[in-house]
Length: 364
Image 1 (cartoon, rainbow, N blue to C red):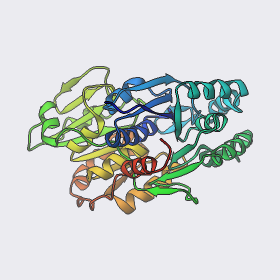
Image 2: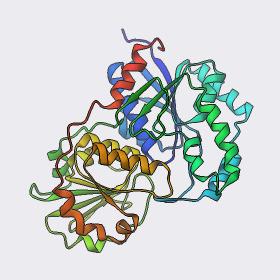
Image 3: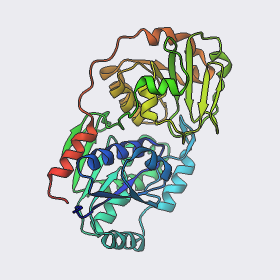
């Protein structure tokens, strides 16, 4: 006799793939411990991302759950456009919240998890359901960076700060940007690799003696201009997910779409080093993979400084300036990166701690 389904809603920010990756790690950890859980995912992050990340079935509802920042490139945001979008999205309309709360009741939802989505908190309150906010920053904290240059953003900061405070439970995950009194703090939350290093490298046709360098800019596409400079590096294979619309292996360069047969945590696990944007999910995967990270910070994003501090303190990292990344001058520092010592063994994956917290409380 099968156990009755336990329905949980998950509202997830679609700003990049980092929030979806963290949420997927939590969902996978929970369903491994209790297969009766059924998640109802509210987000604009593509459905394929969750199909790739989760082993259990789930319901997917394409829903804008927050705004975040309007990105011009992986490293720069358009603040004027961001404010236009914030003005159109906030404050939430009473009818919108009521309709979503009604949906949750119809679906027999017992708990609402939110990866920095204020919408989920508002809907949970309306539906009289407990909510769990999971974050390493909240949007009001991010927007404070811009309030002097863009005074109009202050109204959104105040509105969002009030909303985030209404969560029933509050979990902060390292790298934490704004430490507060919270229900629990965890180490980085990461999806776990599924395939061995050897299996992934064999699938990519990378020789045992070659070094595999993974280059990533997260979930936001960018055309890279340094391809020709990579060719001269002997015994190094460069793998770029999101670098092409189809799989292509040309010399020592391998490129394929974000949505491919290669699971990103498996690529990190198979790599000898990672080069790329210091985004949450990349940091979490590299942290648990225990490999060197050549990281590029985003100068106009407040989270960046906190992420850099965590990398320098807890990981093996080499900072790469944005202009070095863009013009390819970082390539001359690869030998330095590859000879850095192996980071110490990471602490427990935060996904497991969050899963245990939810499952041991009387939510379900």
